[in-house]
Amino acid sequence: MTWKHLLTITAAAALLTAGCDTDDPAEPANDPTEEEDAGEDADTDDVDDSAAQDHGPDGDAAADNASGPQAYTSLLVEGDPDLTASGAVAITLGPAGRSDVPFLIYNGTDDTISRVEVSGMAVDGDGNTLGSGRSQGVEPNVIPPGGIGFGFVYVGPDDLPPDATIDNPAIDYTTGLGDFENIVTLDVDDLTPLDSDFDDFTGTLTNPHDIEVTGPISVGLACLDDTGGLTGVFSTFADRDTIEAGGTSTFTISMYGDDVACDGYLAGASGYTDDF
Image 1 (cartoon, rainbow, N blue to C red):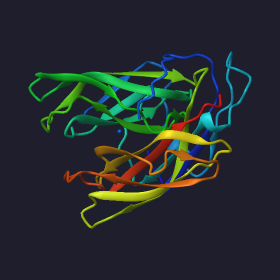
Image 2: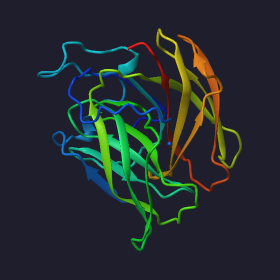
Image 3: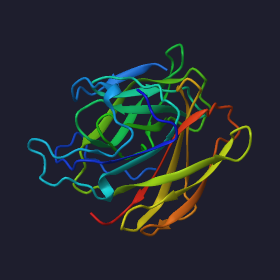
């Protein structure tokens, strides 16, 4: 998969009625593993990163082609993420952090998906069980066909060994959007390292919608090495709890001194709305 340098990807997703998982979580993020047999094999070279990708209703889906805030997706991308290409919703795990295991999600199906959740048992390199956990939200909330997202599986407060991973992770998601979708994706406009060691980043985000977005407004950063491999996922909250239509906010993401390569990255943000 080829991604253009410092590219903002935006897409209007289809509003579909069928769902694999209609839970409504309100939580705010190297061996590839494939899950969910939904969709045909996708040719990732055909993904057009230079323009909005519109996906209309299909078959028995609802007649509405949603293009509003709940169907909006956006990521700020620098570098070339090394992803697992498949005809399914596939996960690529990164090296364990202090208490979590990061991941990239690739939507290789023909359908827009949302509300992605990843869970499973954490094990060390010898197969010993370390605990279990689930993801703490995925950026962006809506992932169109051929699109990507990222997050992390939170395992616990104790330091995980470097070889920790998630054994056979389960991926749950909604096909299209749920009936009461309230997560709204915002645009991350820029990301700037605060020092030469890339330990902290600051940036700004914008609410491009005509509705107010409220908190918690989460901001996520997935770091990549110079080969596009995932090295870690970090998260923070915007400096404002509420962002009016067209408004902006600043944010700062810290790696807390972790030695993580961040030669490239994915960055995304989202909040909530009561406007269904």
